[in-house]
Amino acid sequence: MSWSDPARRFEPAEDVQLRAELRDLLGLGPTVASAPAAPSAELATLANDLRREALRRRRTERKRPSWGLLAAAALPLLAVLAGLGTWGFQQKHRADDLALQTQRQEQELTRMAATHAIEVARERQAKEEVQQQLQLASRQGVGRKTEPYLVIPVEKPLKFQGEDYQRVKAKPQQ
Amino acid sequence: MEQSPQETPFGSEEAFHGAFAELYPRLVSYARRYGATFPEDIAQEAFVILMQREVRVEHPTAFLYGTVRTLSLTERRPMKNQNLSLEAVAEPGLAGGADDQVLNQEVRERMRLLSPTFREALWLFVVEGLSIREIADILGIPEATVKTRIHRAKAQLKDQLNPTGGVHVLV
Image (cartoon, rainbow over all chains, first blue to last red; front, side, top):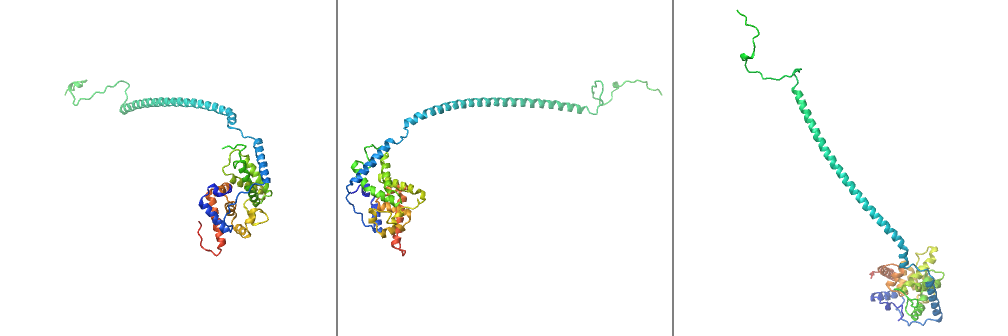
């Protein structure tokens, strides 16, 4: 059995059968397993020459850099990247702190603004009340003759009493 | 898995010589079928490339066939005819060798009538005796695609044998 015989490569039976059918369709006939012929001297020499050439190429070919060499080459780059990463982390931490501080200041300002706004509103309301009282007071004073002196309003009695008036002239005699 | 310089892809030195004696003429013939100008050089280069590899190749036969195919197509690249595959099968003068003595005119005509894609898979499977897995490695396609191509080639061959239009089942 030849080394390249498909049966040696554990080919499935269905593939072997398919090959046989196809050979039949092509009119090739069944495969005859022939004994491997001994390699001729020329072919053996050629094989050795090719093998030597392959070994020579393998020795002289430019080797790919190993993993260790690649790691060593990448070390400075990794150090720079690590430094940049640390610096960036610190900057980010600092920026976060500043942002938090700014936020707190903003909240404080907002709170103070709200307090002031309440006070202003309260004062405004008090002022409006005073103005309303003044307006009311001035409205009550409309139609009266303003006197240059103090007038104390007195309620008039319902009926005249004798003592309430003074006779200034004697009663004419008839 | 690495391969020591003393070790060959085929095992011992004797096994390598035996494999070389059997494969080399087939690879030369295979390269010639692709229209290579220097098929011997291509076959030898394929062996050198295989043995040059430090990592062991799982399927050396498929690797050799694939390398010969690639080198042959690369040689033909300026001709922009890469879509043609094994067109030399129908031209007895181009592909001399043991296989041409096996393939008579009728077989060549049947192969020629197949579409190039199916012909390539059929050739590797039937004439070169490679497994589905090896053909998939050579052509760089899934095994299922190889099987499909072979089955379609079989259907086309049946059509050739039964041109009147008999019913056949694609198995």
